[in-house]
Amino acid sequence: MSKDTDTKYRLAQDEDSRKIYIEDNFQAEIRRKLFHLTSLAFPVIYFFISNRLALQILIPITLTILFMDIAKNFHRPSAEFFYRTFAYILRRYERDAQIKNLNGVTCFFIAATFCVIVFPKYVTILGFLIMTFSDTASALIGRRFGRTKIRGRSLEGGVAFVVVALIVILLSPKIEYRFGEYLICSVAAVVGAAAEILAGNTINDNILIPISVGATLWFLYLLIYPSMDIYKFGII
Image 1 (cartoon, rainbow, N blue to C red):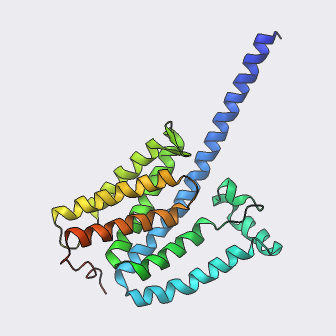
Image 2: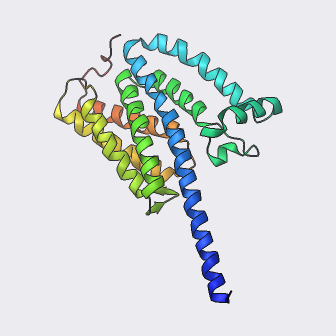
Image 3: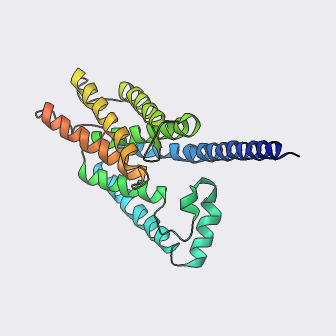
């Protein structure tokens, strides 16, 4: 085999390996995002229960999961159980036992508890609806079609985030269904997408998205509709 032929052969092998790696990553991302969609249960249930009951449920769950997550970093049997049980939905850095971090589920419950304590119910619910659907679309589109990279994230994924968020906004309940409410929610969606891209991998999406979207929603509602009662939302 000539040198040129050998080089072409190795390049082809490298290209095939890269394609397989991307495909494996995409399949793994699908598994993670299917699991991620179960987080839809939180905003749906929260719509029907009181703030107090939500916290009575969330706080013990959050503390338990946080304890287990921290324990895996320092207690070998806990680590073995954790990685054996959840390896199929963990990202590569989350499977690295040498890296001390919190997994996405823990971050989700921390963010949920924080948002229920701090934000009005409407803001929390919409923030998590956008996070659930838009983050899923962003990850899958970005993984498959992302070409324009910004801080490790793709612009294509960010566009998918906003498009899906706009669909969620159109279909989700509003306080008084004023036109300005849709504009406020759209701005919050863009802020969430921008925050996800600009933050890169420094802050977990399950914390970053609902808090950035929620803070923007709350601020703009208070600014544009100061007399609107955004606390009056949900069954209870």
